[in-house]
Length: 159
Image: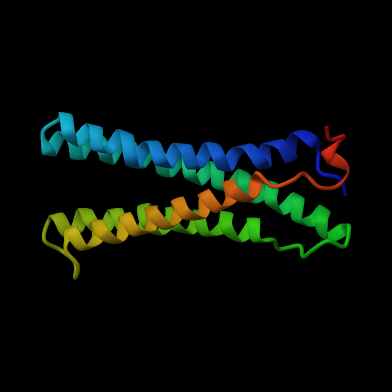
């Protein structure tokens, strides 16, 4: 089975774009919002940015998982590996971090704000930041791996 050249290129491009997106949200956009706006409004703007980031991460993660699956099947068919690759594991891990960090922890943070739950807002925020940081590391590893040499017939001539 041969992976289409555009699919292989997309599999190599998306992790870098995703990592850049995550870095921009965490290191540029969110700190800027808190530097310029009052705390309550900044929190609402940051929450909106993070909701958008989570949606984009779910889409990019699902697309990358599918592309990594195609690549792993091709490599396994050629006798060069398993049908479950490290790239698939990294994409799954990043997706899991998105689901846990945003879709599980953020609702708990809303309850903590109103005095409910076992953990406080600050503790839950720290857990959420930890999931975001882990997701960033996983996506950076995906991006790093994507810069490796092309392999197989889709690689084309070098020079």
